Image 1 (cartoon, rainbow, N blue to C red):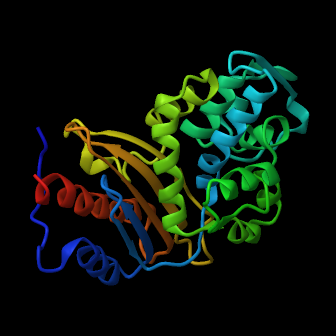
Image 2: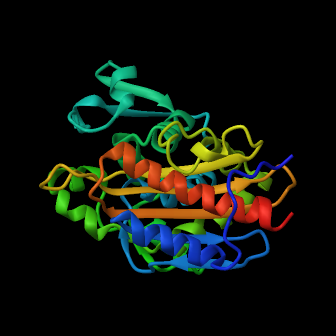
Length: 287
């Protein structure tokens, strides 16, 4: 049974409610929603730094490239620990302490998607699908309003480069709306596992998934988080999700917060509030 959290203003509609919230937040927020029947809502269109949302764009072409080469996710990849970034977000480095790290490709994808591991991302760019191959895949799929110019190590060396890895909220919403149904119905071992990894994402629980707890909805999502600005405020706080409702309908939601005067917890709460607005629209207004 679908649960309504709050009444959505029928006068304003979905776009109006999101716009009103974004305007009152004091933050620079871009939002895109694609409904179960393909209806599209975009608020504050434009390009936003994607940060680790790039790992979502990376995953499907990387899995498919491995399949084309006959490499399965259960196969082992080896990498020397010394060539990896040591002072970046990388749970893999804590879990694997040997000089040569050996792990299945599946574990590498899990680190990148479910835990947003920066080293895992760069290994996949090197061993599976390059940045150029990733861009080419999505361009061929008709999704062009995003760009990846740098890997995680290059952004770590020069944080300003993260602005060059950018997307519109609508492009991100389109990508996950294509990706999830494809992965969940694919007979290919590699790609079928990618969707499950996004469903098991462990980062950003306080963002899009927060108001959906207890509703029976399934949430596949990928977060992205940028560096702090000069005032110590978070930047590039993002979340992109595919939500499957208990009645079988699905919608996608992308929320990108470029700048915010609030702390991280408050900024994540903004994303959760927008998620609640969208959920109420689809769960309650269309019942």
